[in-house]
Length: 168
Image (cartoon, rainbow, N blue to C red; front, top):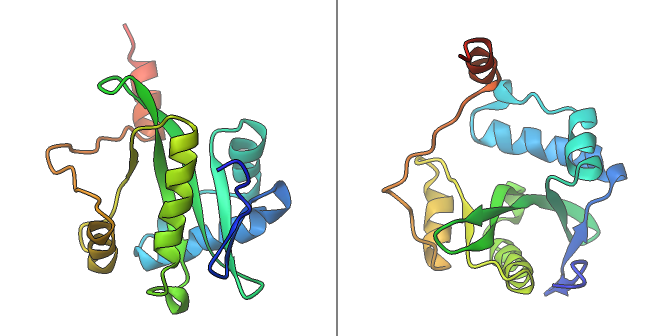
């Protein structure tokens, strides 16, 4: 959607700016706590500033309701060789617990669907922890399908360094 700062049923979506980094970092810590992974958060205001606003690696939208930020979504564009087009990957979607089940999540996906369409993206993807039943049920309700045949793999910083160290 060309004007991302759109109001949808009393929910505002604001494209985050660099001055919003403390809010974003706080939300990252909130989602990590919810996911029982707070000890895994390494992000800092500086790393977020560099990645999101200086290197343009991702987009961050703040979700506002009643003049209060109630959540955020961070996404970036990826590419599918099978489809031959870009897609959107949602890195994080978080809504404060007291604001859940009010249709805000659906509005987030409506906004991202417009972004996808305007950018000729043919898919929106994300991951969800297997124990997070409320989110899994919500995703099913909007038509999302789990990709059970795919397994996520990750090389962390140490594994990357090890590959470089041992290259032939």
